[in-house]
Amino acid sequence: MALRGTNQETGRPYNRRIVLEAIRLRGPTTRGDIARSVGLTVQTVSTIVRELEDEGLILSVQKAPEGRGIPPSALTINPDGGHALGIHVTPLGIEAAVVNLRGDVVDSVRREVLNVAPGEAFSIIADMVTQLKASPHCGRLLGAGVALPGPFDVESMSFVGSTTMIGWKNVDIRQHLADATGLPAFIENDMAAAALGEQLYGLGQQLSNYYYLFFSVGLGGAVMHDGSVMRGAWGNAGEIGHIPAVPDGEACPCGNRGCLERYLSLDAFERRGLPADEWVQEIAPFFRNAIRTIENLFDPETIVLGGLAPLPLLHQLTTLVDGLDNSISARAHRAHPRVVLASDCQHSALRGAAALAVFGVLSPRYGQMFETLEKGNNE
Image (cartoon, rainbow, N blue to C red; front, top):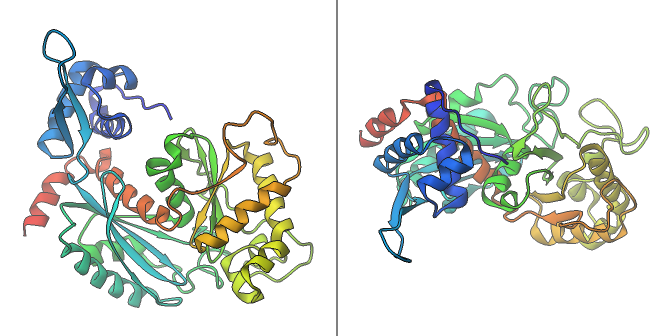
């Protein structure tokens, strides 16, 4: 992904975000290197760097001399300069974590609650947040992000059926999260959040165009294009769980029959009741067809497999690539396998949800947020 700033004065909040991301990705780095890489003047970068240093978000380290003169100081992200809360709500339970600016999960808590209703969920979240705020690993909190099963805003699919959050339709999730946490609140579907978490803190630092296949209670995915989540007209691009897999097949809560996630998901695994290795062999044709479909539609560098499924099950699924047939991705000189395991399967959605909060607070809509944060955290 090419990070590019703007030298227009109105773009300064955006430039702060770009400079901070450049330091996170390339640090230790210098002001001059940042200016050249993002297309800003050294003066503009220096002004932003001073602000970020004053806020404790970055650190300046003096390089060891390599010749005559004093070398320029190197800039690096301050992992403890700020934290965000990442929250993942699923039909199986709720997990919340404190994530630092480097993307490390420094503390987390989980509650096993099946198909929890909104009122109870946010009461649990409030208790979890209180517990996490008391953690010795929790510093200044920038915001909170929550990830939930998608797709969103689709009448026949959103919050309908066993693979999603039944009863959450028409709930003001963002406001409930803000009330439960006392922080700026952000919301995303868990597929896109997981893809964002992988982009920022995992394999995405090597890749810019890939598909994140999110194997959870249901089945979904998100397309990463040039380092950003491809949204589509209504924000649900890459949704694969409801593509037709079996003509006139098993009935799906969405109203159709034979949807892929009825055969390929944790829900399908539990309903089938087979040992994992037997089930993997049974669904191998569905998995391989899904991989070829994704490849032919999106031409990704690779497909990243992650989600809530146990790691041994995900590992078994990745072995199915050995039987993959031809597609536009079946080329001899690939830099990466056609399917790879996510770098942090269990935490990708949490880290992505937290990243929403970090970047949301640093975005133009929250230009004065730090004053509010400091006041709120000191009360």
